[in-house]
Image (cartoon, rainbow over all chains, first blue to last red; front, side, top):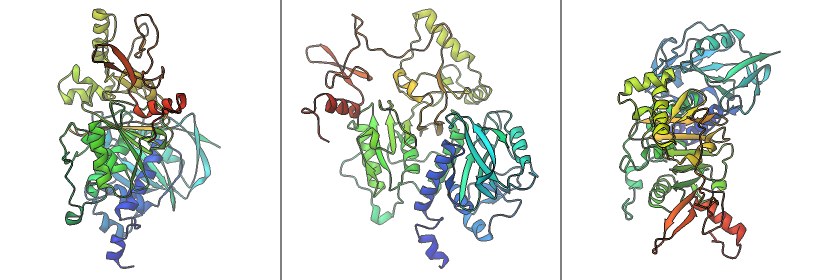
Length: 182
Length: 300
């Protein structure tokens, strides 16, 4: 398919109607943390990103074509609004966590994991979760959960995570507390 | 809105939902941060809408950033689907979102935009309630500087707001705030829940549905996520209470139209000066009428 055709195609992830649907999945994922939704990493980026945001891609997970279409500002992972990173290796950066007055400036981290729905079980609780919910995540280095707890220790400051595998994702807003389970 | 006015859809090629995609993404990013920080007034670049600020432009921008062709939208103003603000906003969304459906039934709606009320029927998971907000900051009555209010919110410092409530009790033996009652969300931020009556606040507490609040003029979006604590500010020895609609004899007033005695009532004064009461939520009233007097039920 030529590029012009794919941009005009409403089913394409760059089309407005597809982005509306992906956003509603994002909304559901953030409203009910731990519930798995369907959308790929490029579709999430296309829905959230444009020239208004800064994006960091320390592990080079975003294709050059997607960078070009997003038009997002390239930024270091320590400063960016959005960070895309590999979940199977140690976090090698200190993301923005916002300030007491403006906690929304804390970063959103899109974390690439191997598989959602299979793997180590995390027990989640907090706003959006009735009692507790279990989320199975395959290929997530436990160091991420330790660092996340440190970054989010001073609510309202903190970072919000979107875990994403090939075609699915789940959100972990900063309010969610995580207990690991064997 | 001018009834003869139509958007020049063909000439200008307006996008679905009127807002351009940059505006929608701006609102959408703010919504996700607002959910992640429950009760925090997330700033966003509020757009000019083809109607005056103060007519629900904050709620409308939320609705337009959310809505898709598969949605069924309900718009209410003071509980009614047929009052002027609701009719205008519904008409605008119908005009700019071809294919989307509207409804007056709370149970059938996927998306509900409301001014000043939360529907009587408890909302389900995945229904979304959008509230129009004139004044988003509960602290504005005690602190005029926004910079200082932001610090107070961040620190969860609501001592002066509690003092204000205490002064009410000293002077009137009662907290006199009837609507916009300050409410603490998830144990941290205190919000102005928009001008909903006290009666509606318990419906926010650990609700199954997401509530989004939009203030277009003040350029703020905030949220009460599902299953999240929403506690009206009160004191241990002076608990929060809601309107009870009891008459002088202590009886609970009932709706003069449908007979319900478990709903929020509007007071109506007749030509002879006599008072009567009627459900504020018109869909709930119709539903009760259908149950109680099937013959008289309005078919809609």
